Length: 160
Image (tube, rainbow, N blue to C red; front, side, top):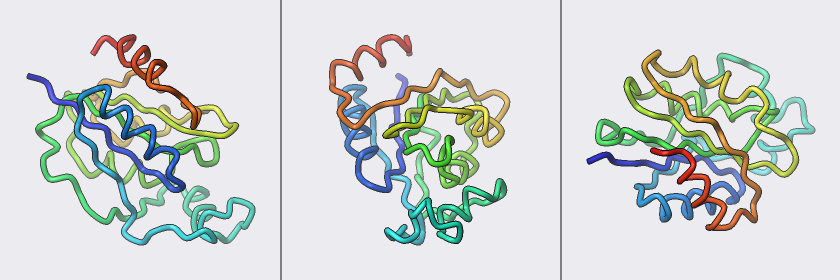
């Protein structure tokens, strides 16, 4: 029997809300990707060139530490990975998450939240953080008001 995980990083709570709904619909386990050092409001100020998030996003090698690691990743074969869009891509902690596990043979389904930006080159930037045998499904950009029906239709369209 296949097992599904919804792993997510949420800075403001928008992605968390959608991840919880998605996990309920998909009958999946839920894991929050938390930074070892939580982000403050000042850290998230994208208009400040010296804010923590700006510095991380401008450094391709940046890999913010996670507060904890999921102990049973081998139990999952399908993993929804959710995050807000930062600078047109996933926050660097998503690379940290993906690189923390052997995801060979697993299916990754990214989903993102954004007030105005699209997915950009998000998946292209995340793929190198996984094995060549990891399967990627098309990502989905979700708005904060995405309803259960829309999420259900999307999950069904994936034919997992």
